[in-house]
Length: 212
Image (cartoon, rainbow, N blue to C red; front, side, top):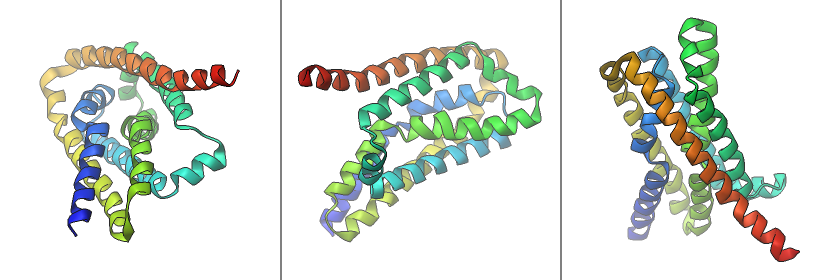
């Protein structure tokens, strides 16, 4: 029992540190600043549900999926970096602000940004997916294996609460503040994208040169 509790605490804290809800919240605010409270809530719920199921699936079948599709974690990092860069570029140019003019575009955009990049790879990114796979490998017994999705669920619930609580900040900073935040977060996302990209590229290049 004590071992299961220790494993649960470790899983919870490791996912909390990797996902970092407080750190992701400003990006969520910047991307959803022009949405209504109800639309922002819908986006937050979809993003956290997407991340929860993604991490749970990879926890139980991650190695099989990676082997079946021939995917490496480093390749996932590179793909995540490309997605981050493209989204950051759009945010830097304030293109997301167009959402408020067309209701159909808003509904489509809610689905898009909730899944990518918020759900994947911002919440369920290379780090948290790798963590899910490794922790499932290390889980001793069925109790620990069942504890892992519970820990993921609790972190996602905390993330959802953080996102929903952040809505009040939008009202405070206003439209001008939101545009500034949108551009700033876009720049930060592009920097994160570069880090993601080269973090995945370096090991691949190292293996190529060592083989060569």
